[in-house]
Length: 336
Length: 175
Image (cartoon, rainbow over all chains, first blue to last red; front, side):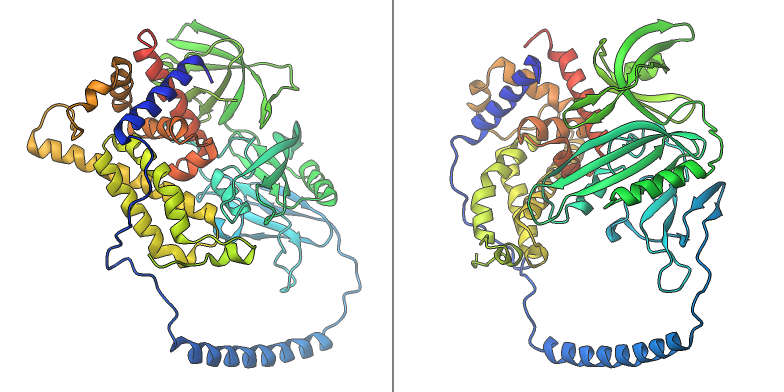
């Protein structure tokens, strides 16, 4: 926090202090007549009991049929073999016994939505009840559209587990305050493309929700892909590494990554009414930037974007750059 | 208000009722609302509405933290509505100048510095003003601000960075 920020904070608080005066107890809350809560309705109980009895009867009959069918089934004699499946324009290697199923899960069902509603997601895992549908151990997601100008978001930010803070609320369902730490961060091969590989330890503040380990391969250039898993143990991480190594993704079609951030190493005006911004890429953990990669990357920011963004970047600051794959449309200083 | 036991929290050994939450959170929410709308009377209405809405949902809320998050979001939304209605009313009534119903001595208590910050904040776009107010007045984290405003984490950081840069360029030499 800079001196300027401290001053703004102090002045803001003093303004409110002046407007409100000293703290006073809450007045009696006048609730409108419409603000009544739904209470227990006595007539619901007999209906609920009847519904339970019918449900139990149906479940018993169904399970009897299912069991009798299973007894008649021929046992599988050949061990499953690894497979390679074509998922849109990607060829994905799957370990023995695994399947890929298009996932229709919604974020509320616990699926981390990396790229949003326009994307296609496959659930990867061992066969489930139907013999073909996968029991989700990991997800593969292909972005459906490129980021658009003015649509600032963190979907392609490799340093957020699952891409969005809304995902995080799913992890801490009691709306607990939580946090995450970056356990591992490096560039890895994913199907012939460079992916930002991250392992996150996600922890909720209360002890109600156990901490989880997220593993994420994110390819943040078009077409963008993400391979990720919640509750990932060592065995699952090894499997994911194998999937990443043996699969084949379509070639990069965009000149630029959609999202990048790093230490500013240089800012200068260049021909073509542009600003050349040189950054040294970092992963951003809760304790500050992790900078294991000495390479620098250059972005050319149109001068009007620089002006609109109203940034005052100096060497050593951490800058975030967002692009549509061709042009930088957003640049800002990242608080770390 | 009838005293109620918080089901989810009670199961974990903590008794938290609507009354307690109201007593504890009314003042912080009033401060936040005042920072957002700039007027005490309008802020009190916003907070009243937020608690009334929470009361209606009380049975479905399982955790006190969720209740506080819900209140913050309601206050931010309520403040947005107040400010938007104010803009529409100004247009219709062709009233010029700053809308204020504070006492005559209110502005004299504030120093020139306060007035400068108030005016500079008022000129920021809605999103930037909200993010900076939530950060400096309510001292929320980026994650909490994202939750309260419905912005993404990147959106919060961008709005914060841009808003602060705009304030610095307008006030830097004067503060």
